Length: 216
Ligand SMILES: [Zn+2]
Image (cartoon, rainbow, N blue to C red; front, side, top):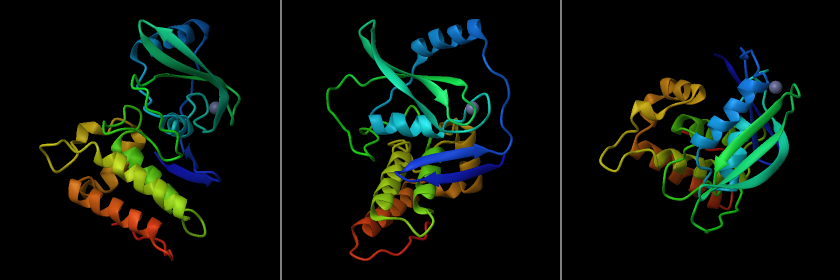
């Protein structure tokens, strides 16, 4: 599958697939999907992570990206969930995302605050590195906030390296985008390489004068 990556202002990342998937859910199946989503709703560690996820997950109807909607908070069996309902900005199909919310009351509201020490349940390491590449590949060169955003994304990929290993195991790459990113550059997903990339980006973000980084 070919992926065309577009970047719009405000760090919102956008993907379009060359070969969009087809099919949409009818009412009954849609309700079933919602119930299932409640049961297996992934953890959204922070608002920034949830927003990034909704930005990059392609619409099942048209394969396009961009979602606008509203959200409600729900309590069920002692867990807090956030349900986002709205429409695809490309084709207008209804879309819905349900996230489990963290139990700890710590608020992390920065644009690049993607979570705590635990790995993401939403994006896999290949998706995080794709996000980093898009942020640093902006036309005209990355801004300092792009570099900090990219560094945070690389640090998210790093969280998938097991404590007793040097490399991210292949099964951690659960998305199509992530698997393709891994297949393109498998050697990138080691503790040493990811740490070096993150450190270089942090240094660039803090430097008084910036030059576009050359990611290894
Ligand atoms: Zn759509």
